Amino acid sequence: MEFPTEPQIATALAGVDDPEIGRPITELNMVETIDIDGHGAVAVRILLTVAGCPLRTKISNDIRAAVTAVPGVTGVDIDFGVMTEEQRRELRLQLRGPDSETISALAQPDSPTRVYCVVSGKGGVGKSSVTVNLAVALARRGLRVGIMDADVHGHSVPAMLGVSATPTLVERMMLPPMAFGVRVISIGMFVEDNAPVVWRGPMLHRALQQFVNDVYWGELDVLLIDMPPGTGDVAISLAQLLPAAQLLVVTTPQRTAARIAERAGAVAAQTGQRVAGIIENMSWYDTPDGTRHTPFGAGGATAVSRALSGLLDTHCPVIGRIPFDPTVCAAGDEGAPFVHTDPSCAPSKAVGEIAATLAPIVRRPLPVTPVTPAMV
Image (cartoon, rainbow, N blue to C red; front, side, top):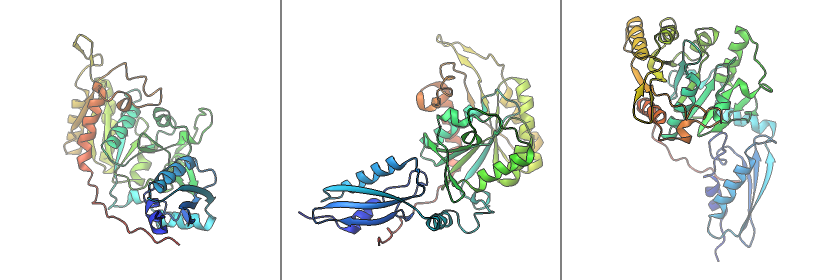
């Protein structure tokens, strides 16, 4: 019987990603040693980024599955250690680069990440629900997606995604939790028992600055930012921090809501940002007999598109209309987006079409197969 070799085990481990960082554990120097005895039993020592790693069990299961699949392996023993402070500093430098303290990769002109600020003029139009479900729909199309919950005073994204975990902190670098294939960060992950966040402008700006600079998002295709309603401090701060971000304006068909939504989109005239599109939520409701009702009126998105196109002197298209369906309204309360729980319902299909409209804009570079680093 042929026993496995160390290079074979190293190759197998190169196929195991750290679930929070999304890169191979070999590339991150998490594999400290590999030992193979004379009977084919393999022992590996893995260095976790932090002692209380929340995904230790997943890492263990993935390693065991990868190593067991190597021909000749008769057993797998995994010993976990923890990186030293110096190793964590080297990891941060590897992931973020030497300028990570002051410059975010998201703010670079050549950043491959498309950033969309999801805005509305007023609350109650379903902006956060649109953000969450659009993010999951994009992830289901194979894109790498993140959500930044910038609605500091009215944070709701973690609850809608069923996220109760807090970010892992590695050398002042936050690794955001993931749910439904989407990485997410929110101030709601740092407050206890639904406590209110009572902050003024400077504190808000500092929190957003940390979300932009200190969160390790990885190689995202799309970052959606759930903005607070209106045109206050957060809109100004994010326009400064991420000047290339585009706006997705959410409104309802109601003309009053549309008029207020125009103000949110008009911020682009002062910040130099582009309005990527208008999304109309709760556009209609179909009864079981097929009758279509418009309880909130009609024409809101068209009115916003026309007004902003004239104001900004560029076409601001309506990129989707999402129908109202009371059966999916409870999905967010249960921590499961409706595009996941009921992908065949009309709202899910509408969100999927919006995702398809945005997805072709993202140009992911061709993957380059890395050379597996030699194990010591």
